[in-house]
Image 1 (cartoon, rainbow, N blue to C red):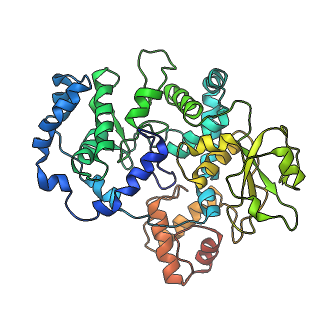
Image 2: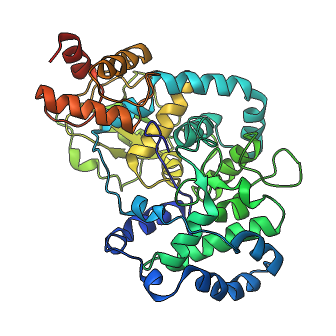
Image 3: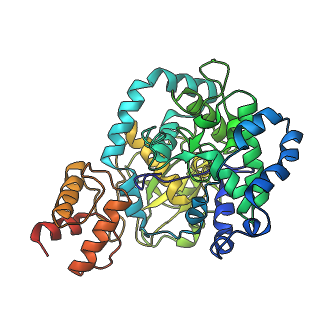
Length: 419
């Protein structure tokens, strides 16, 4: 995904398990040639895997169509080995992902797909703001699903992982088989199936297992299709949130809250469910001053940063988190969905935080860095890895600490003053 996005992978068991699968193999993958490569050649492995495909009902014709002459995309090993290039405070994470650019793109997409979103909400009970949040986080509302800088053919990638990733081979084998079943059913041609390095595809980034088992033929064209029109992708994602995330119709994801003086922070354990009435009894109030509308609904309290805003998290926050186990990701999803549908920014500042820059200010940073000979990868106001590397280089030259690559107000002010 673009660095202005966050990648996520739906799972064979659950999407969060896939993330653990990926992280769990890093140590082994870093150790040089893959174990399977040393043991057997890729063509030999392809033939040895054929009986597994037959048992899944995949014909030899389909298997040969996909696998004969396939070159494994061994670059996926480097993606799996790669450690995060940048670390972000929560306020930075939110500013980059719930950006003006993304909010405006989401509003336009919501307008274009108003009837579709309303229909899915009626059918599934999943609020369209949640769907918009997931869609925006995964592919910036479909803007990168066919961008070759971020997406690649998934069969060479999954085959390389199934052949050569030793620790979680069974998982990758199953996803490769799932992808082959999709071709066998005639839902897609092999060349149509492009996605992330780990095989996630379409508007809301489904792994093949999710495509097969959770997908919805919303547009009634006889197949489930996560590309092109967002209809099937959004309907399938609503079904995912409802079935695997246990989304509850009519409940809020939660609220930003203010705590009373001398609040017992041990109550913010992210484990204990209490009714909103009980939280109110403890002196917890919505940050926007409005009343809690359903005092019998339950939530948990999260204080992500000492001295920063608190959040009461209802079940639908955890539905968003079922898409990716990160609390930061889930908070960005629900907040982005709120902002796209007319909600306000968070009311309270995070300690040390800055406001999000406007698109014009981000473009100015990129333009000034470019004039200094630092390649930002473009000056369109989108913050990708190129911009962050250029910012970090400038921070190091200017003695700005930490040199974290974040293009914020401090960087802009220093650029305006010069080195």
